[in-house]
Length: 633
Image 1 (cartoon, one colour):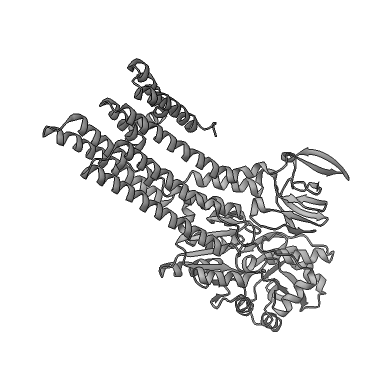
Image 2: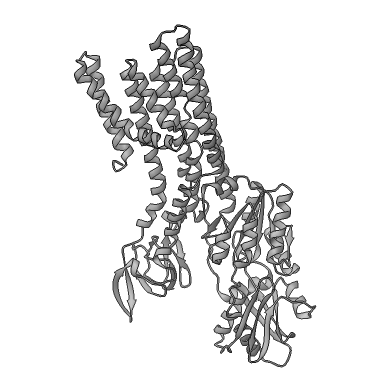
């Protein structure tokens, strides 16, 4: 705490104030008391005065300068004690604000210290202790019971329970087995596991959270920018009103000391310190809380935008569903075997980032198929992929003509893609995806928070409708290209709605960029979609949505309440000073305490309880296929 310069200044000012006041009240000679008061003024007012003068050189009137001028004015008319009291309370208020801001950032950036400094890396079957920063993607590390996981990765061997409460807010340990993801800084439970590192240590979830909070701390919300614009004009009005209160009565023969004291008191109580600090603490605290729950927001302005959301648009694949479809059937038309057709399709899809393409490649590798070489690969967003294979053009994509196999697959809620060779349909691949656990509960929560979401997908109508019916969404828009999804959002916003869009993959970048707020799903989102989005959801892409909107609205309410309290205190104190006799000490105390109050009120969001956590345990292949065939999760 004493590392903060604001705290050191406040302590020094308080020390010399506590020394000067008793000496003054006991009648000590001025050569002794004067230097004590002067040192108090310098200790608590030097930095605010420098800051105010720098702002003045840039033609900006800083409220810090108003406080210093008022304190010096009080001293000039013999009110050294009252002026020193102003300096001490003003410095103490600044120190409290600095401490609370530092704690807000430390609550998230401190996560970087959770990761261990060393890790046990497996090299040729033997363990070697290395620095965590030296780990690379593809390394395998051993984590024993009670140790912290050194890097983000996938469990490659073993079963354990992982306590992620310090990072994700999940209150209970979560079972993790082979194939499950784990995060750096979380605590391993009772089992020894091997973890395959899949993310650079400098790019872990914790590092991302810290970076996002730092970015948020350096940005300002729309309301904050508006308040600061008003503050500049308001501060000029305060100075002019203070001069009027000083010069006017003196022209009519008023007492100099009493008139100057009233004017200085007015300058203090009318200064908008509390108004300036009313907005950012709750918004920044909301960013911090969301980060701890696995949602990284780019800046404080996103919190304001989330509070205005009254409609939600959800991409289907990878958002509502798990985004890991599997091949259920391979049906060739032209005499090829199923494996030959699958190998041909997988060779073309090998260059695709789409989840359906990855599923086709995964199935081919699972069967041990050899993939032929391809040339001139082209991805056609919303349509499929195409490449040259062995002198012919092979494409894999959405059906363009009626096929019995396609109709049957869609009737069951599956997705069918057609394989073409030189524009001739040679087979169909049938795939199915699994609906995320808790999706229906999320839709119910969203319906009570904002409105029933709209489901957007490039899939066919029948499977999309089945997914919508299962989770409780009536409005389903199917067969959409990326531009079509963005057009749906544009139409909603033209109708006066404020849309929150959630999606994954490069093809959802237009959707996320068009929406009032766009959130990318961290598991599958490409760089382009993350850049287009206002935030990234690192965990469950559905469960946090309703709590996140609720958090943003709560932050908005606190900001509004802070503004109302700050304005009410200013009005009350200014009225008292103008129509009565407001003691300078009371004015100083009221002004500074209101500043501290609004700051503390905003930061109480940091005490928000954890969001309800849902455990999404991956099922085995047979379970997933049975789920897909029956249309149940």
